[in-house]
Length: 295
Image 1 (cartoon, rainbow, N blue to C red):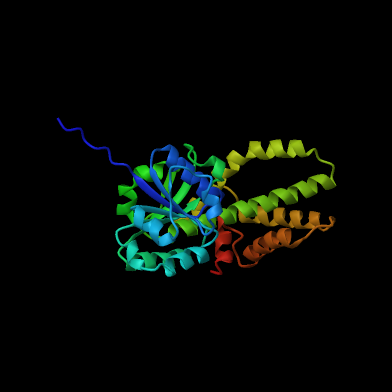
Image 2: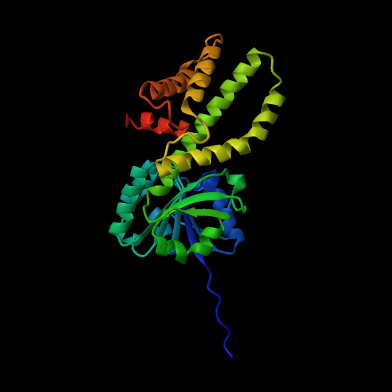
């Protein structure tokens, strides 16, 4: 009686920064045959029982599934454009987890697709230490057939994979959208700290209250996104004039502080323009019309 030979899954990783090294360890621990390439060999020396190649070309050739995670997409494009033979991409699934913009994703997709390769663009939403957990969120988009074929290999990276469709640029666009929300919220948070310091508030109280009110505001934000999606700005939750007055108070309060005033002034100005353009009888979400220059 013959015993079926177990097929060892293979993965190649190009780029051994903190995230690249973390992913390499995860695939080694999962029993994959791992091939590594990095511009400098020094970062490969900590690894044992892996294949170390002298070129990105060789790393791509050794595995059907290739992850690129380098400093930026200029580096990704440099690697792909300088392959000795781009034909090595044929039949390969190239997963680019390098942080970059939507236009760069489309440019990389064009290179891979021209060689009959499968391209999947991704954006990791966590730090290296949060990889491989059930809550680990990774945004992915591109070749759906390749994504389904290699789903078990993707699953090693995290439990909350979000496949956003066949358009490769979608994951980068979503990454930028969520980062825009994140940094806007974070800057507002720090301005709140500054105001609290001015008036002698206990920052532990501020931190605690922020944590307590965040879930409710998250529901409100989701509701307002739905308002925009439906295109119905009838007042249901938050009349726009309330926020015009509130953002005026915020801007006024920071006039008394020795701080950069551009952020509170920008918020106030957007709401002021909404009022001036006749949106006073609409839901707060109607400010999208001002931001998108629709009025």
